[in-house]
Image (cartoon, rainbow, N blue to C red; front, side, top):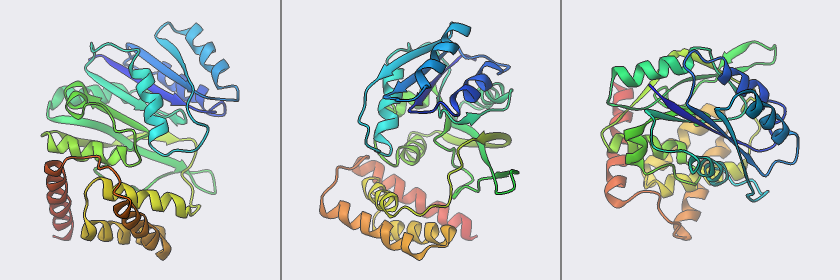
Length: 283
C-alpha cells in the first residue's frame, strides 16, 4: 500500500530530526513526506532542508500563520498547506506531529490493518511518554479506541468522506465521530508503541478547558453529555475546576452562538453514539 505523510512543524528544532529519522527508518516507506514549516523562528527550516537533500521524497513547504497559539486551527491550517502539494494517488494519508518517534515497522503494520479490513477508516497506536525517572510509560487515553491526533492515519475513502480535517479545536475527536457516521471503524493497536518526545504534562490550563467546552458545544454534544464528559475529564485530572471550566466554555459558546462543526443529522448520530458507548462501559 502507498501513503503520504504531512508533518506540521512550528519551532521544532529540538525534536524534528528524531521524527524525520524515524520516518526514514520505516520498513514501508512513504511515497512523499511533506514537512510544513509553519512560521518557525528557530532552526526548524534548516533541519527540513537537510532532510530534503538526503531523500527526494521529503518536501518542504513554508507557510506563515499567526504567531498566536490557536489550538486546532493553526495545526490543521498547516496540514492543509501540505495537503495542497499532494495528489490523490495513495491508499492512506497520515497527519504526524514533529515530536514523535515511530517504531520501524509502524506504517507496515498500519498498511496491514487497512488492507486487512476495508471498514477501518482511522488507525494508530498508543503514545508513551517519559515519567520523572526517565522510564517510558503509556500516556493513558480517555478512550482506548481513540487515535491521538499526533499520529493519525486515514484510509483514502475515509479521508474523502470526512472532506478533510476541521480547522478547529476538537478536530481529532470530531474526525472519529464523523468517520463512524460514514460507516468506518476506528482501530487502535496496543502493540504500536509511539514515543512522544514532548510530554503532555500535568500543568492545568483553564483557557484550554474553556476551549474543550466550546468544542463539545460545536460538536453538538448537548448539555448532559457535555456535563458527563467534563466530569470524566475532571476525575482523570483530579481537578474539580476542570469540570466548571469545561462547562463555562460550553455555555459561553452557546451564548455566543458559535458555528457548529457538524450538521443536525450528524449531531443526532454523535449523541446516540456517545450514549451507546457510555452504556457499553457500564455493562
